[in-house]
Amino acid sequence: VYIWDMDETLILLKSLINGTYAEAFNGSKNVQSGVEIGKMWENHILQICDDHFFYEQVENCNMPYLDVLKQYDDGRDLTEYDFNKDGFDDLNKKRLAYRHRAVAHKYKKGLHSILDQDMIKSWSELYDVTDSYTDMWFSAARACLEQQHVNILVTSGSLIPSLVKCLLFRLGDLIVYSSWEVGKLQCFSWIKERFPNVQFCVIGDGWEECEAAESMRWPFVKIDPLPHRFPGLTPKDLGHYFSVVY
Image (cartoon, rainbow, N blue to C red; front, side, top):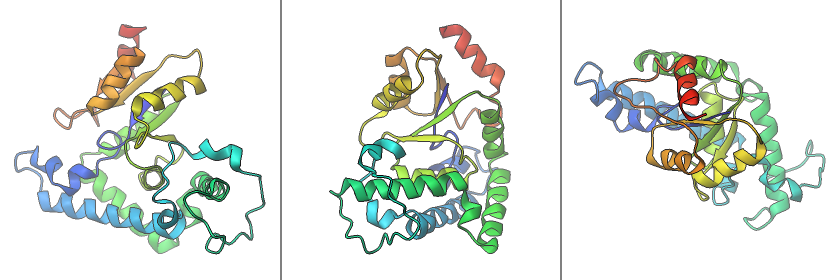
C-alpha cells in the first residue's frame, strides 16, 4: 500500500500561487505565469466546492474521511432530498452523513457528471497548460500511481476541497484521508487497520508524514522540488525503499 501526501507531492498548487516553484528555477520559468495558473486552479476548486459539494454548509465540520459517519446514516433515499431546506447544523450527524454520502456518490461518478462541456474544456486545457509548465509533474505522478497496487492519499487540508482537488487533477479514484484535525500518525494508524498484514510505503514532502512514517516503521520517500522527483520517481525507485525496510 502506497500512502501519498497530496499537496506539493502529487499536486503542486501552493508553490505555484506563492511563486516558490518557479523561483527554484533561477529565472528560467516565468513566476507570474505560475501564480496565474495557481489562482485559476484555486477559483475552480472553490467554485466546485460551493456549487456541488456543500462546502459552505460543511466548512466548519471537517471529517477525516468520507465514511466516518456511516453509523449515523439510516440509508434514506436522497434522490428528492432538499439539502437546502433540511435545517442542517454542525451538530446534526445524520444530516452531515447524508451530505457525505451524496459527496461520495459525486466523487465516484467524477466531474463529467456535474460539469457542462464548456467547463470540462476549460478544465482540461488548464490541466495541460499546468502539466507543461511543471515539466509534466502531474502526468508523471499519475503514471506512477497507475503502476502501484493500492494508493491512499493523506492530506493536511480539509476533506471536501481535497476531494475536489483530486477530481480536478485526475486523481479521483483515490481514497482520501484528511489529517487537518487528527494528524498524519492517526490517519496512518487507521489505514493500517483498514489494510491488515500488508507492507506500506509513504511518499511526501513534509516533516509530519516523515515522522509519522518513522513512528510506524514504514519507509519514507521524500519528494523535493529540486532535484525534481516528478517526473523521475519510478516504481523501481519505490521498490528499492521497500527492499531496504522490509
